[in-house]
Length: 339
Image (cartoon, rainbow, N blue to C red; front, top):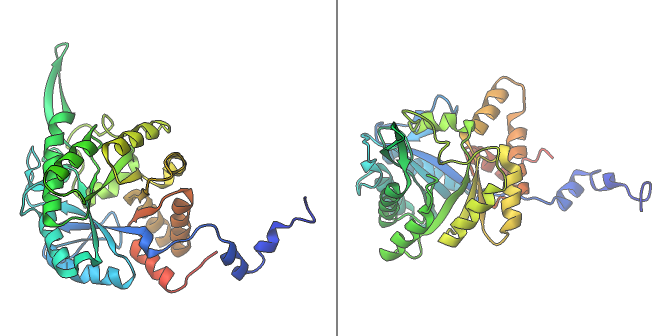
């Protein structure tokens, strides 16, 4: 059959019909809200590179999360800004570290009403800003400093265990060390945390879209870059290697990061492993572009936010980590529908 018997516009003619046949749905339950917890401040502080987004001291988390709950947002992921940093990132796995204290307080205030994900990485806690432990190697008479994968695993496992001990529901290793999911799974299981989940940053690219986050979390590397351990943006099918390894090592949820420049990768990973829950991280640079353009009147911010989030969900993401979560949840609650 063809035109004029088939007219696709019939199903677009009225908004009520468009809504009835829409293929993709979006809900606050789909979102994970990033929260920056800062040990160096005593009141919320706006992040200059992320307009409208804030760092919070532990004491202000209760009111902030109450606001999220009112919007139907029940999943949060915590990133810490410690008072002190050192070469071994010791604040990352300290029992009284900023994230460990934040987890305990959130669970005290909200119990299981809030699902707490935690970032497992060392970049916010090391003096050099890399995601693991730095070692020196001399090869062919040339001295090089590099992130030591296997040494780093020990410290990342300690961090994950400390989060579980504090009450985290899901730990999320974002460091891209080989073997980290398996090492964390064994560490958690050996310490009695068999039901603490792992959301693996399985497919994390060495992206230029992370800039505002690095200001927010004070995690920019002091030297070099992260291209030796994060993925090459030119590669697509390598994502399947990374995802399959993490599945074999015990990941419960996979992630692709960033989201918008890698919608094809989100689709590929979900199509290849449809039984695995898949998250996508709508990162800080993506957030800033929308905010900057809408503040100048170049775009309708609300419409663009919803289109962005629907595109990520349509590509195959089950969960979306996004700095737009509260504004999107508010729009959804108000029945906002620009389509």
